[in-house]
Amino acid sequence: MLKNILFDLDGTLVNSGEGIMNALRYAYHKENLAIPLDEVLRKFIGPPLMESFQKYSNIDPQSQLAHALLVDFQDFYDTTGWQQLQLYPQIVTLLQQLQQAGYRCYITTAKPEPFAQKIIQHLQLDKYFQGIYGADLSEKMQKKDVIAQALKQEQITDPKTCVMIGDRDTDVLGTRANDVATIGVLYGFGSLQELQAAGVIATIEQPLELLKQIGDKHEKVF
Image: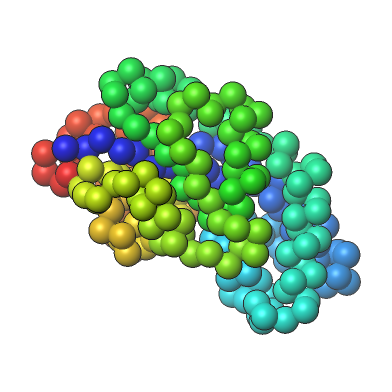
């Protein structure tokens, strides 16, 4: 029986693109590097930063440059960038209805946990979540590690009682590594093709569609 809903943060609950992309621009500029195009910067949203530095800028995650970029990014994000976001429409209503229905909701994000906690508290959403789980400040943790940590900490032993809600393939692959299914959202930063290739069980175009998907998929999948 489905009891636990794991939510990604960026691109699922909040549109955080402005703050993340501004922090990346600041970091690249400070290190005298060419700033990637916006279409590339958008791809940074979701996966661990160190992974994206290597994938999109060919920067060794173990290098001093990667470390400097990370520090620059976090300096900007911690002071300014974290506030440059908007809550997606319907999210509060969705969380209220899930809470009223008795589901236990959690945040599982590759974003550093202190930033995730700050954002959720700022948006006054903490009352809807049983726990907030994220990466450490090294930003090297994979999504699968964050999810494993959440399941262990919350003593959730049956993955079939859970479903993940996310917008990127890293969400899907991270949950699959923990035997948890994922419903993908199409209003975030990923694409239908990306999510389907990773193995989502369903997709939604608006947050409130999740309520129907949970009902439709409950007996068959969970």
